[in-house]
Amino acid sequence: MEGADECMKYRSPLVSRYASKEMAYNFSDRKKFSTWRKLWIYLAKAEKALGLSITDAQIAEMESHAEDIDFAMAAEEERKLRHDVMAHVHTFAHCCPSAAPIIHLGATSCYVGDNTDLIMLRDGFDVLLPKLARVIDRLSNFAEKYADLPTLGFTHYQPAQLTTVGKRACLWLQDLAMDMRNLQRARDDLRFRGVKGTTGTQASFLQLFQGDHDKVEELDRMVTEMAGFKKAYLVTGQTYSRKVDVDCLSSLASLGATVHKICTDIRLLANLKEIEEPFEKEQIGSSAMPYKRNPMRAERCCSLARHLVALMADPLQTASVQWLERTLDDSANRSVVRPRISLPESFLTADIILSTLQNITEGLVVYPKVIERHIRHELPFMATENIIMAMVKAGGNRQDCHEKIRVLSQEAAAVVKQEGGDNDLLARVQRDPYFAPILGQLDALLDPRTFIGRAPQQVTRFLSEEVRPLLEPYNAKMDVKIELEL
Image (cartoon, rainbow, N blue to C red):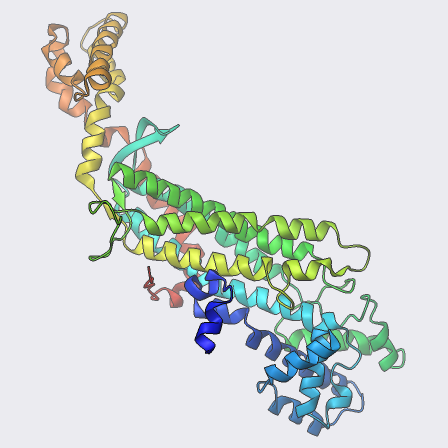
């Protein structure tokens, strides 16, 4: 049975379990081989326009069969020929007998292989960028909503000065905004390989056009334009430089690092019960512990983000060992043309990470009362300097006051650490006659809003000046919501 046979084969969970239909299709055999046929059609059209003996009927025949690919025939041809491109040339020629003599005319395998890779990279970025924009949009709304909600700040994961929930979200947003610019730049910097021949010299095309250099350059320009690119690389070997892959995947790996940091923060805050990711009504956190609400979405993001970061090693090493005009040890490692690993997996992984993070940011839950309790537990220690300053203004001696506060703070810390009690520093201050002159000011001195500095103003300005303008090109695509299958 077909279903039983499928269960005997490894299937990448990036496709079978996680990735969106759009991204899975972008790296599919259907997309790849139909793009090959489109590239052969572009080449034939341009060659005809520039004077080669190619007829309208041949081009029409190719166009009418651009999508009806006989995959079984292609597989059988590849088994015999041991060459994937020639297998598909033969398969295309079989259904286009009049066009058969001019299919792939003057081209090398990398004409379809590398150019298809570049199209898929470009289209992959076009899938990712709106998703990243939506994550930034949702997180921006969250930051705006909680711009002035005080919360404990942490350094070394130890309580530090206060910040706000919205300001912390802006730290995440700033990294995501950098990723947005990096992905957009990598996408916009992509060029087409174009028609360059076997070692990049365009010798075969120069021969086809009887030594006419202008026609060869125009052929390159025309095919590049038909494929939707503004420019082609002026120099290539047999392949485009594998530094292009480094450039693309480094932007994705950097995104992976950002998402890992954000989701780790969410997991830490979930442990403190200050913030939680969405949790379905019937969702089970643990098979053994019914009370648990595990941050499984954030954990999924962290897990996949590590994979995304690790994939960066592949293009770096591949680019470093491309001998002279090219060597074939790049293909199985990177390519969408043959066994597909680093390029498709990077985009597939980034795709599901962004979908999951959008789902998280659309449903983040904040528990202000828990946050307030944690602040009350730590704030008396943080307020000691304010108490000292108030005492000095009331006529006290700074050094005497400092010593009083130091002793009381140590006693209160002992209650917290050794006895497991609450922080009673404030009660100790209130009981000490020394502090009688400022007792009426204590509530104001311990108001959390006086400890957050300019955090709310920073949030407002950051969102206005740096985040919202970045999202403007994607405003029409903001309404898409993500429903995850957990």
